[in-house]
Image 1 (cartoon, rainbow, N blue to C red):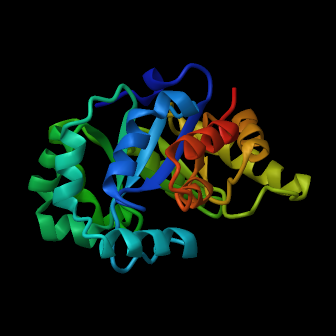
Image 2 (cartoon, rainbow, N blue to C red):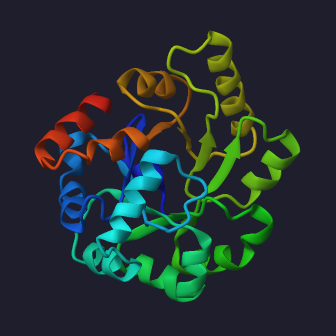
Image 3 (cartoon, rainbow, N blue to C red):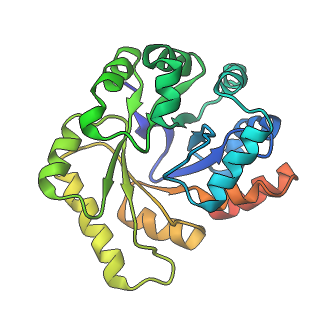
Length: 249
């Protein structure tokens, strides 16, 4: 199983992109230049026609990627040709994985250099079959925990977790009250009781100030919408520059 701690020194910077938005070539160029924008781990979003867990910006980006002819087969083909020293993690909906075939998808992902899967709508209770295939290939199946997840369930989720814990910070931090930050900090401490895996926080983390706050209380910050939004700009150098500003050291 991949140890995600080897991809960062102290705190992890995790970015999310929609593969194929605005086109596959730009996605590939961004992946090749991750070093330039201080990204340690990249979530590679596989566009899907019914993205129930995504906000408007990401859903629109996925729609445009699909309109441009992006498919999982094309994504895998492109990724196979990239030699990246970063951790690449697929974020894909279960229906897409199921249609491809669980065993075949996990094998293809591994061959393409993917080291983990994030499946937003897959519950712990329904994850057994996919988890088995991931374990065979040494891929991490990432576990979600929210601020409202009770201790008993955290213990159960962490028992079979691998890779890292994805903590959903459903309360916005930008300009938020200190009590909200304290709630998140307490949840991180609670999770640490049950696992030694790194805990990365995502959801509504938009800029450098947010990333800095998250780094103080967890192992890494996940920035999705702000990064995807940058890809409206077709100048890859500007995208890299702005991403670097979000993740500046």
